[in-house]
Length: 102
Image 1: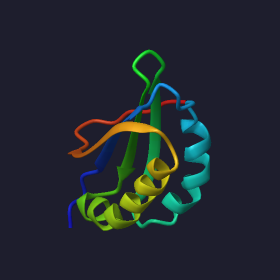
Image 2: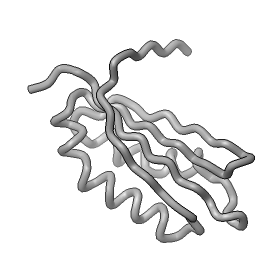
Image 3: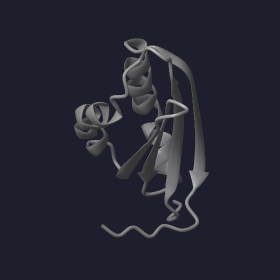
């Protein structure tokens, strides 16, 4: 089993008529994500000019990332089915450095 943290990065381009509501969406789906084994956190960014939402979920290891894919795929589909989304791209990464302060 891998002990290196992994990440899923999803970039969503909103249609011009779609209001930005990423924080509300995260609050709604966070309880589901917390139930997934190995979930370590989520960071969501928004670019007003380009109408981009970027969501990065952090996972304990590669196995947790892979095991979460089916549920996270359903969450992404449900989120985009009710909104005007121009495109959405998801990639996965190995986390090589992480330092967060709050």
